[in-house]
Length: 131
Image (cartoon, rainbow, N blue to C red; front, top):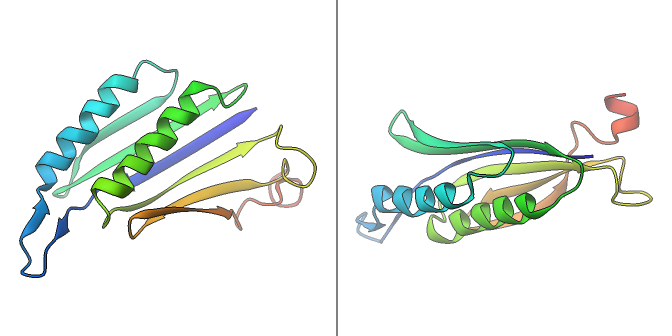
């Protein structure tokens, strides 16, 4: 079983004078093109403006982390590069990770232009905190 969910608040970046390096509407269009390209997978994937800022979200549940995981991970990585002030997370659970790992949720935290992998402290270990 492979379960994943995540969201990103997409923010533009600015130069030293406060002028946008790349406009938020341009970033939105670039990300929207990627969303359109990969939306055929079996998941819930969306993006729209909330209170003036673009938000992207995804949720999925598959037997294994097939092509859709690669695509969504790439999308979140793209956002971290083209909109480094953006923030969010992409969490997952994979029951086939192997000994010592398959009882945990993991989260990629997107902040300051990078994505870092962290063990989710709220749902891990699954056998103790959820089941």
